[in-house]
Image 1: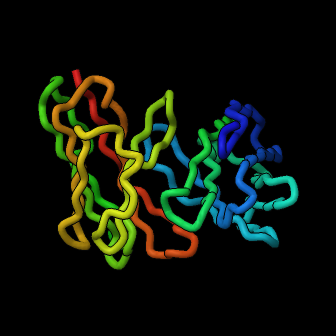
Image 2: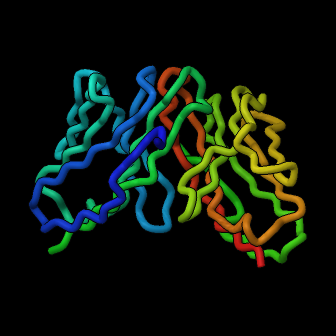
Amino acid sequence: RKEVEQDPGPFNVPEGATVAFNCTYSNSASQSFFWYRQDCRKEPKLLMSVYSSGNEDGRFTAQLNRASQYISLLIRDSKLSDSATYLCVVNCGSSASKIIFGSGTRLSIRP
Amino acid sequence: DAGVIQSPRHEVTEMGQEVTLRCKPISGHDYLFWYRQTMMRGLELLIYFNNNVPIDDSGMPEDRFSAKMPNASFSTLKIQPSEPRDSAVYFCASSRDRMSYEQYFGPGTRLTVT
């Protein structure tokens, strides 16, 4: 089993829709969690950190479920500009070398 | 504030040649990471530095790869000799926060070895 797993997609949804994707992790001792966004042929960019209590940034909501070992990203009122690959990132240990990137979920928003 | 700077942005070289990739992290960031991204393997951590000291190089594929960080504002990743299977996008990232390691990536170097 991979340490961090994501549904590769693609998710193809209409503009204005709400879309959500999950990411599961295998190490119960994982300490920090993030969502990154990567546009085609660009670098990954930090979208948001994921806190235990959940957090929201505009149309984006991230949640952590430690019991089931997954994090989620919800995008409301999706825009064409949200089309990208979303990478789940988990720090599986106390060292930076334990930061594991998921393979990404590809999202495509259609007009 | 400038982000992470990488050079060159594109590199095409022949098998057997030496390749040097360069990175300037964000000022004040104590951590620097080198990653490689391919379609098949995704984003892989090669090595990371803390305060210019290499901490973990277990991701470096083999002895052909080496990385240095002579000062807080400069790092290099060298491949010698290069092989076609080294073709990938190489990203440098830096981080300030040692607790959460929020990372900021450079634009990457797209390496093609023919």
